[in-house]
Length: 255
View 1 (cartoon, rainbow, N blue to C red):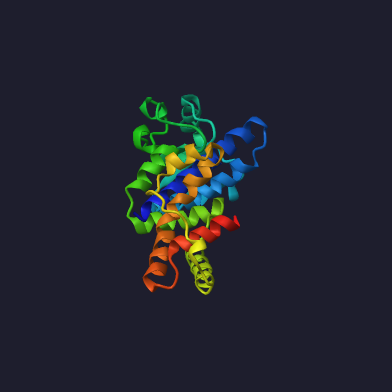
View 2 (view 1 turned 90 degrees about the vertical axis):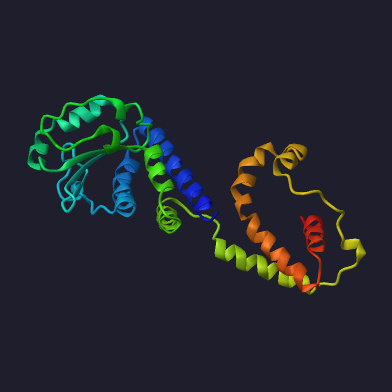
C-alpha cells in the first residue's frame, strides 16, 4: 500500500520535531519555536487549504495571534505550551476584539492536547471556537492526514521531506539496484556461488537469532523497500542469466 511509507515518514518527522522543540525549550533555545510557526503555516495551508500568513512578520509579537487567514477568517496561536491557562489567556486578549467574525484555533506543537480539547474556555471576544475541533496536536493532525487520499498524503510527504529532512529516494534506489544487478549479471558463476536454501523471510526471528536488537529500528525503517528489491530479483530470475540466490551469496561473502 503506497500511503503507508509516506504516512510513516510524516509521523516520524512530526514527532522528532515535537521532541526537539520540547528539549530545546528546556535549554531556553527558542529559535526552533520561531521556525515552527512558519513550518505550520505552510503545513496547514497544504493540509487544510488555508491561506495563512505570519502576522509576526508584519507586526512583531502580536498578542494571541501568530498566523492569520483573512480569506477564511481564521486566527491561530502556535505554542509549545499546552495548558488551559495558555488558551484562556490568548482568548482574553483585547487584540481579538478586532476579529469577532473570525474563528480561533490553537496548535500545540510539542505536547498532547487531548485533555485540553475536553475543557471549557472563557471567550470574552466571542470568536468562533470549538475546543474539540479547533485545538490541534500531532495526533489530531495525523488522524486528519490518515483520511486523505494517497495522492495528497504523498504531497504532504514531499513537503515534510523538504522541511524536516531527507529519506532514501525510492526512484534512485530502484535505479541503483538495477545497475548493481546488471553488473553482477555479467559475472561468471559456478556451483560454489550458490547459497544454501533459506526458509521464508521472518524478520523478527532473524533479528533475535542474529542478536540485532540495536539495529532493529534501522531494519524496520528500511524493510518497507523490500518490495522493490524483490521486484528486481524476480526480473533477474526471469531473464535466466543468473539466479538471485547467486547474487545474494556474492553479496553475503563480500559484506
